Structure formats: structure tokens, C-alpha cells
Length: 122
Image 1 (cartoon, rainbow, N blue to C red):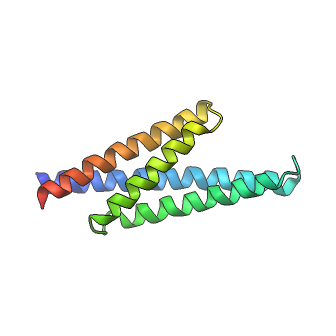
Image 2: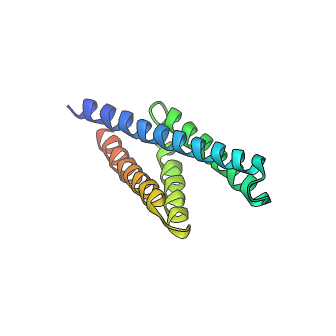
């Protein structure tokens, strides 16, 4: 029973990382398309777009490694998602930011629960 629970938690955690990656990929592409169109003429639009794509890549990397990697990956994943939570709060806050914050908080909680279950199982 414990093994099935851990596998389910790992798959769910992976799914949330991948969902997060897809969302950030979409935001990054949208930002770069706006920057290329010259809508606001700001270099910052390019910077934000690239940072969003990097965030998508890191989320994808964690999502692909979380199932097969050892226990140490959880430490770095928790730190990274916690950083995303802090950055979500410090941004201009709207409905999309609230949804991203909820996703990241859910992922953070799931990482803690999964890590705890893995450590308990040995």
C-alpha cells in the first residue's frame, strides 16, 4: 500500500511540474512574441520572456527527474518551488498570479508530503 501511495504521489508531483512547465512556456512564448512585435519597445519584455522560458525548462527538468532521482532532488525542487512562490507574491498580483501561486503552493506541499513518505519508507 505504501509503495502504491509513493508512486501515485511521485506521478502527481511530476504532473504538476510538467503543467507548470507548459504554463511558463506559454507565457514565455507570448512575451517574446509581444517583444518581437514591438508593441512596447521595451528590452525588459525580452528579458522576462527569456526568464520565463528558463523557468519552464527548470520545471521540466525537475518534472523529468523527480520520479527516477534520489532523495536529494527533493531538497533542490523544494527550494526552487519556494522561490517561485516568493516571486509570485512579489509580482503585480491578479487572477493569473493567484492561479500560479495556488499551483506552486500545491506543488510545494506535495513535494513535502512525497519526500516525507519516501523517507518513512526507507
